[in-house]
Length: 79
Image (cartoon, rainbow, N blue to C red; front, side, top):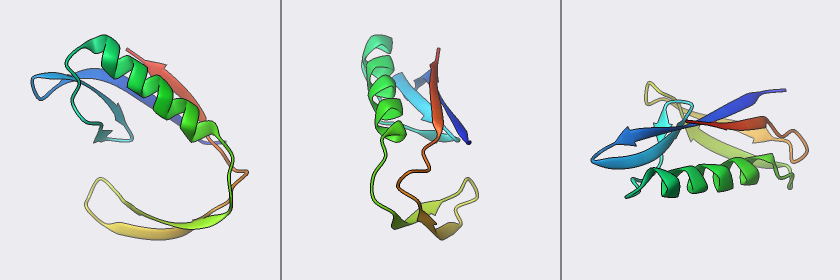
Protein backbone atom coordinates (compact mmCIF):
# COMPACT_ATOMS: atom_id res chain seq x y z
CA UNK A 1 0.00 0.00 0.00
CA UNK A 2 1.27 3.45 -0.87
CA UNK A 3 1.81 6.03 1.86
CA UNK A 4 1.37 9.78 1.36
CA UNK A 5 2.82 12.18 3.92
CA UNK A 6 1.32 15.67 4.13
CA UNK A 7 4.01 17.94 5.58
CA UNK A 8 3.09 21.35 7.03
CA UNK A 9 5.73 23.91 6.00
CA UNK A 10 6.35 27.64 5.74
CA UNK A 11 5.62 28.71 2.17
CA UNK A 12 5.17 31.92 0.20
CA UNK A 13 4.88 34.21 3.22
CA UNK A 14 2.56 31.91 5.16
CA UNK A 15 1.98 28.21 5.72
CA UNK A 16 1.05 25.36 3.40
CA UNK A 17 1.13 21.61 3.27
CA UNK A 18 3.26 19.66 0.81
CA UNK A 19 2.55 16.17 -0.48
CA UNK A 20 4.63 14.36 -3.09
CA UNK A 21 6.48 17.61 -3.86
CA UNK A 22 3.33 19.66 -4.55
CA UNK A 23 2.26 22.57 -2.35
CA UNK A 24 -1.25 23.49 -1.29
CA UNK A 25 -2.54 27.01 -1.32
CA UNK A 26 -0.97 29.30 1.28
CA UNK A 27 -2.68 29.74 4.65
CA UNK A 28 -2.20 32.59 7.09
CA UNK A 29 -1.42 30.36 10.08
CA UNK A 30 0.24 27.02 10.69
CA UNK A 31 -2.94 25.79 12.39
CA UNK A 32 -5.02 26.56 9.29
CA UNK A 33 -2.54 24.72 7.07
CA UNK A 34 -2.49 21.72 9.41
CA UNK A 35 -6.30 21.56 9.50
CA UNK A 36 -6.38 21.68 5.69
CA UNK A 37 -3.74 18.92 5.53
CA UNK A 38 -5.77 16.75 7.92
CA UNK A 39 -8.85 17.22 5.71
CA UNK A 40 -6.91 16.42 2.53
CA UNK A 41 -5.38 13.32 4.12
CA UNK A 42 -8.81 12.10 5.25
CA UNK A 43 -10.28 12.62 1.76
CA UNK A 44 -7.36 10.73 0.24
CA UNK A 45 -8.24 7.65 2.30
CA UNK A 46 -11.88 7.57 1.15
CA UNK A 47 -12.84 4.89 -1.32
CA UNK A 48 -14.79 5.70 -4.41
CA UNK A 49 -15.45 4.64 -7.97
CA UNK A 50 -12.80 3.25 -10.30
CA UNK A 51 -11.98 6.06 -12.72
CA UNK A 52 -9.35 7.38 -15.07
CA UNK A 53 -7.04 10.07 -13.69
CA UNK A 54 -4.53 12.49 -15.16
CA UNK A 55 -1.68 13.82 -13.03
CA UNK A 56 1.52 15.82 -13.40
CA UNK A 57 4.79 14.62 -11.91
CA UNK A 58 7.62 16.71 -10.42
CA UNK A 59 9.26 17.05 -13.86
CA UNK A 60 6.11 18.52 -15.41
CA UNK A 61 5.26 15.34 -17.33
CA UNK A 62 1.58 14.35 -17.49
CA UNK A 63 0.43 10.77 -16.91
CA UNK A 64 -2.87 8.95 -17.40
CA UNK A 65 -3.84 5.86 -15.45
CA UNK A 66 -6.77 4.06 -13.88
CA UNK A 67 -7.37 4.58 -10.18
CA UNK A 68 -9.20 1.71 -8.52
CA UNK A 69 -11.80 3.05 -6.11
CA UNK A 70 -10.84 0.61 -3.37
CA UNK A 71 -7.05 1.07 -3.65
CA UNK A 72 -6.51 3.91 -1.18
CA UNK A 73 -3.17 4.99 0.29
CA UNK A 74 -2.22 5.26 3.92
CA UNK A 75 -1.83 8.95 4.85
CA UNK A 76 -0.06 10.88 7.59
CA UNK A 77 0.22 14.57 8.51
CA UNK A 78 3.64 15.71 9.75
CA UNK A 79 4.79 19.07 11.04
